[in-house]
Length: 177
Picture 1 (cartoon, rainbow, N blue to C red):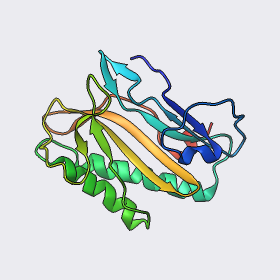
Picture 2: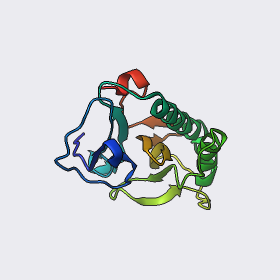
Picture 3: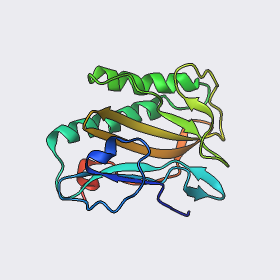
């Protein structure tokens, strides 16, 4: 597997969806967002993989948002399996986020393959039936005005569910660097 960094943001810049790396000096207690989406390859196939981290300390208000992001990804994965629609997976993800009091999210994922943005998408209105062999980047993501938590991994659909293609810890303790 090959990794290249697509997006890197820290501090207040993490709320910008597609922020590019800069010469900004990161500080203790700040969030850091790293995105390898479309840059992580597995046998020439593009995968989605991203994470929010903190440097040294994690503010409690941001940890609360991050935990909802992790829970929303878990809900999506609990729903992800052959025979369900793409929008069903998104609905499970969105329910967790909205029940926690946050705004309705855009999408929880998308298919990946030779490109890093392919159909179907795990979003409201996509009625594609999930089938074995499909590969999806599945995110957990929550945004507030001052912070965005993101947890994204790629999964291949199997006959009975899914298998992860990307691996990185998600616990708060493991994303404090």
